[in-house]
Length: 569
Ligand SMILES: Cc1cc2nc3c(=O)[nH]c(=O)nc-3n(C[C@H](O)[C@H](O)[C@H](O)COP(=O)(O)OP(=O)(O)OC[C@H]3O[C@@H](n4cnc5c(N)ncnc54)[C@H](O)[C@@H]3O)c2cc1C
Image 1 (cartoon, rainbow, N blue to C red):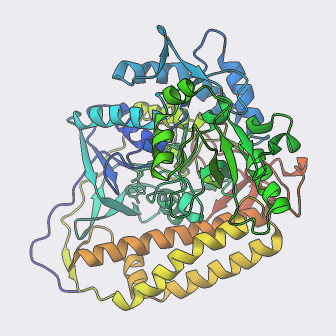
Image 2: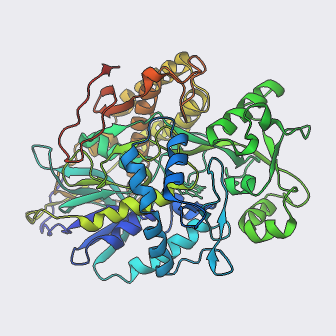
Image 3: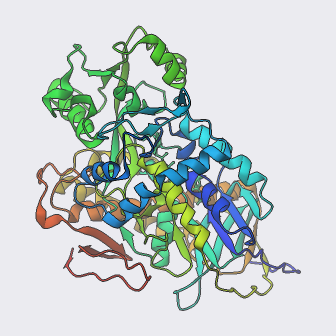
């Protein structure tokens, strides 16, 4: 690698926030304004699951409701694995977060003067605030506008965070490496906040956008952070199922407003599986569809059921779901005349980087928020509309952050790399294509040991086969503080695909390992060979490096080492 002449000083920030969804944007705004903040995001600033959110945001702000009821509903949905303190903290701080959004200008729908609320599955009260069916967009547009006018925040878009930069003792964060504008750069800072969203792209059928490749979770894992409960993935029951169309989400709120789930023959089957019918928890409704299709269809993998909006007043549909009407229309479906074909899709990752109430991970200087984090509020299953709330409440904790001084990095060398990785890309792209189908078939809605083990074997073979490629070695051997210029934008794209594929493979590997270890069914994790929930499994699954522990203890809020008792799996 030839050395170029003048090394430039590494950019230096106090805090680097990775990801510009609701969590990352709100964190950047809540950080003390005297701090120099970089907001790094791998696409445009508004691209992420947050922008896709339709149904709304849960908060017990109506006089007929209270945080205790919200807490009870959340704990129930989480099937014994919620962290009580984390849930209590979230529901008690919901009103303040909502008030802040309203003050910043988010236009929630109103009923007269009051904020309008809708009922969603497994909530005991109507408590979901919304802005038609584009609540996420309303929140993101407001937060983006505020971020862009904040002089202490520098937005770096179309930049992919690759890895963390730690001290040689690996106990303190120093910065991150970034793929940006045909360069790999190391940015120095005292604090990194991972807010990279979820990992729905691990599965072939997902409501998540293309950016949701589990990057933050993978980055934290490689750095040695503790991850928690990765086997828990929520499968949303009703994503549009039409050949060629994306798995566009048909919001829970549609069922909340009275839509019926019917099969090919018009039969309303959900009550056969749960007394709450369409409004049972998401995992129950997803499994009801899965089992019903396996009972009634000769090709259940490609079959679908229908969501019939016709029981709802047309005026109400027009007022509440203009975006769903539009998208369905684009795919030739008139929701006023015919039911929408739907099937389940991977939607929300309950597991993530283990954090305490301050959003601090097990590595000093490393924070995780939003879907990347495992704060403990979702347990084994997320209650609808709690995730946007979690993003805000835990991002706001960064307002209390105290920065340890981080010495300015020495000047970096600039190297130029002549990349010739074309011949290796076919193999990487093939694995990128095959992995999501393998994960969907083995670790999707219904799991069992044999398929999980076969999938783990295959994923490990793929990981081994990629490890010997030059492009992977190049990524593995990047040295902190070395700036590298790539010789083409093609090389940048190739590195991005490779980095994302490696992240997906690492996370696929950990989801499979965690799912194999949990010999029971609970929340988003259903094992057909262990269909019951077992009290013996009232345990979290903790992963650190290749170690997997099932533990009843939680991460210590003083950031000391986690206490794991328990069973090594
Ligand atoms: C279709 C849909 C509908 C939903 N509806 C609701 C709802 O109504 N209510 C609710 O509470 N929840 C809902 N959810 C869930 C909720 O939207 C998400 O959990 C939440 O928005 C996650 O926010 P986030 O900030 O953690 O991540 P995201 O909003 O996904 O943002 C992640 C950000 O990280 C960036 N990024 C990722 N990797 C990198 C990298 N390596 N380098 C740099 N940047 C990176 C992305 O570009 C993006 O900016 C919905 C989810 C989906 C997919």
